[in-house]
Length: 436
Picture 1 (cartoon, rainbow, N blue to C red):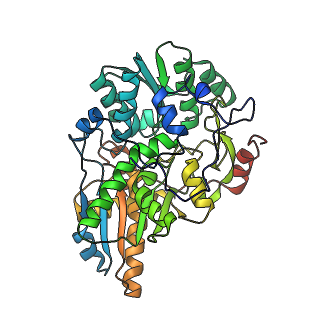
Picture 2 (picture 1 turned 60 degrees about the vertical axis):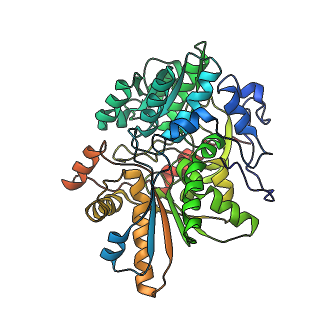
Picture 3 (picture 1 turned 180 degrees about the horizontal axis):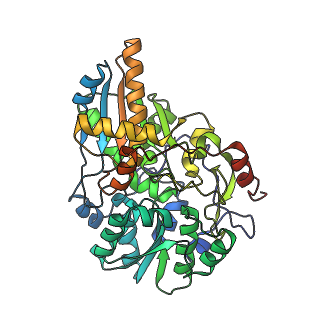
């Protein structure tokens, strides 16, 4: 697992205790997270952290994941570009999330815990964690963003099949959930809301800890197996990608995909153009503020310095996919702030158009999240056709869309529209950022 690149000293800002304004200590974090995960989160010295054998054995079920040359897509686009995608959907959970879920469940079991709590947006993370907990015989409590709970019943039922309890968030089962419902009657929820509820349940139930599916350094660390495999495959055939593209919600798959390539870039060994693609309805990078903010709506989690829309921001209910977190990974935020990567947005009708185009040409029905990267990869390939440049493009295909057919149905019926928050709406949420 890649932790960071040696020689790059501009490290992400630390998590802060909201009460004291001081960096969070291992002792403070261990009340919420598993001990080993806390150690990984705070580790600033090890370039690599070994993967335990039990996790490696589990990975053998579905890893290495394929790095695929999109020959049919190249031909359809009539482009000189060479297009590759790293496909992470070839496991029952349907996405890359299982890479971190199994690691976090392993450390929880090793610590002797009864179970874990978490949030999930579109449901990929909750699905993956329910699988991992079933494997290690751990209890799993999932708080699912309410709009996704209602739009994605099949994803919910997969979680329940693996033994997890699934609660729509915000709910009246927690103190923070009741406060959010009182402040926002009829709200369809957000990841920030669900995180608050999951953390409350973890800290008020003995033998439980909270686990997170994205954003944190530990999660990007686990997901770096994606980039390590991709780079190993490219190196084997002496291929170097020019452009690397990933969808960005909290940052786990993008951070994992780019890890070894960004390491080379930071050390001056190679250069890559790296593009983060986020939904226009939740534009943390492109329209957010780089500042300390709460990771959750209930303001009970540590403060993280990140590109954020404000912890009070709730995406529009017509936003059909995941990628609905109000902030972004501190690591990716620092890299973006330093100009080492780009960011762009895509509206959801364009995203679904690209998804169906890809499905008809390459034969895989992609997740809406992944389709943000597909859309921009197609755009880049079209630019190569216009200029005649033979660039090599890599994008992350983070998972399949077979549990997202309600969203596909809305698109096919012409019932999907593109909501983009106004500057005034974002300003209202950003104005509530903590004064640090």
